[in-house]
Length: 562
Image 1 (cartoon, rainbow, N blue to C red):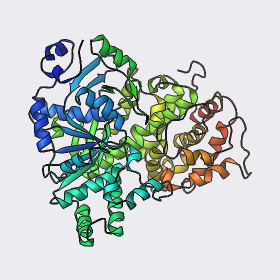
Image 2 (spheres, one colour):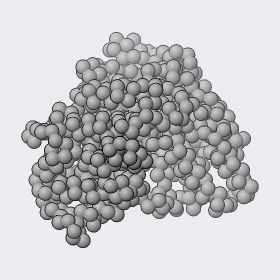
Image 3 (spheres, rainbow, N blue to C red):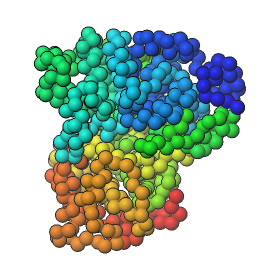
Image 4 (cartoon, rainbow, N blue to C red):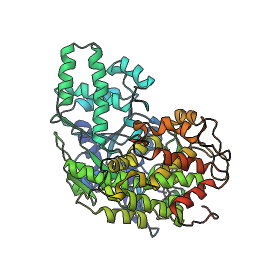
């Protein structure tokens, strides 16, 4: 049997290679020693995309001699991941690429030099933050990981209490980052880059704004064992982007939960211990990760302490200027991939689908994705110049989403939808609102697919599928508040327009909230349309499908749902 441990890189290496695994081509023990002594890259977020995309990029640089240190991975949220799939395997991972023809390409990834639980490793994190050698603090923590406020823009109660305790009480990833930057400042104020690797519009700004908000709260409070002059100088350091930069980025690689079919593939190759795990906080993890082959990383080249040459680590990696990153990000996040993913996720859950690939077999759902992408998103997308938006969306709809070997589920994509909606749809809606009169096609009132998805999301939040059966909802930080606003609405009991409990009466507080949708949907001319579509979805069993058919205009199979 093959065991994922240090021996697999030396004594057992030949057996792994004979089994078809791509192996690291460097002295890992020497890499770990160098990394511990002179850390260059600290990454927050121990999830699947980090092990499937970012860590393999650094491994490629190590393999080719373009880097001699690895990455230190820190968990500030789900510590169980470190305990169950990092440390038991010596921080090694197996990354499996999934081709559309079914071929699986396994690689042992060894570029993670150390893993840290933030709750018990604060002293070690402080050492890393103070190291002059540190170049990057990166984050892959999902959209909600940057949020310090509720949907009304107020600090959440937990964040407020945390900030009152000062830097020593920091637990949230953003407050922890601010506290570590304070330690770096006190140790000599060496430069560093804060790199967000999450699907957020202008993600660098979101990261920077949250870190600054935490730091300003401490500085305004004063004290915490430090004179006011220290706080003033610290804020000057943080606000100087030539010393603490926050480059924007766009990242793209579909990385679903670990798959049973991939586990079986690895087990058949003789690898033991490839169990699928669910942590108490809801993370689906394993000693392996599985992902599609296509990948893209476009980052603004602003790293005041230097960076590894990741553009030399593989295809799809670009370092460029902010304007190009913004175009690439808006192309992908608000038009060519993420809004299509969310649309399929919401309708897939309501219609009983279990995979994104199977949804693409339904002409109706495919037409919905095509409409949102080609007809509604593409007209307001600027070409980033480094790759073609039309070719990008073609690859998404023809090759990537339909890949039957990507075990991605609507239920996974539906997680944290409230955090995604403002970016995935709000940016496009705002773009239409900013271009009045240029063309009838650039009037937000003419949008159909986007308001339909928003209406379906409210129908989804009722927790009942299109067959009127109870449906488990994916996690969302605003779930309680959203469902409370919809309390009492039941599918099969249509709401009548004009009454206090009409769709408009219940949805208006949400649809008019720019924090939730990126714009006031009534000002955009879409509020009433969403109300009407939502009311249609409530008209009994099968109403969701009928609403979809009525507005998209392509007949899809009502039976044989996957």
